[in-house]
Image (cartoon, rainbow, N blue to C red):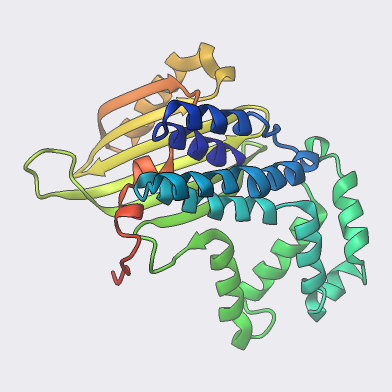
Length: 298
């Protein structure tokens, strides 16, 4: 999430005059690297300095174009980032403790005890094996299977979908979060999919599937992948972290092998070391173009 926020700020700079751009760069440079301790300071900087600065910029310049839309996206992601703060998680835990299923699993643990547990966890050492997260997933899994009563199954399905999928009628693309373990390595990924993207070929009436995938692999780094698939053919661009700079040839060969195995013709492939995250707004401009429309696709 922090990488997305930095990418949005970087994109905004391209719409500003030099003095405003330098002022935003100065504020953005104060954002600290991701850690549980730094999250609170970063959220405070975003809310108290960066977003108000951008608000004043729009008010003074009357710039109602793309930058205003980027500010809206930044505000949304700042809210998501802040809600991931340990204090916000502890407050959510306290609310969940009102349910008997949670009380049974956590044995009367207080929000403060839960918070202290999170602060004392060595996440690098735990490698994603957090018991509280496993307990939450176990409750949801049991509910989805109908073990909490068949009449409650739909409610648990809604909880699971709400955690992973953004299905707002105002969102013209599908947005999914995919936490997973890949060969023992924790991976957090986000995916945006447009199943009805207009063809990139001039004069063509065909439509295909466009996908933006962002994933962060523990101790490896951050990846960006954008793809367009149409009639068995694929265009793809992958940006990989600096730690894999010596393995670009292997990455290319691996991707080509996967496509061939699945009988997909790879028409275009770009593999490069990624220094900047691909903005969602650049991959899917229709998110902003249709911001006042309602998606009624069935």
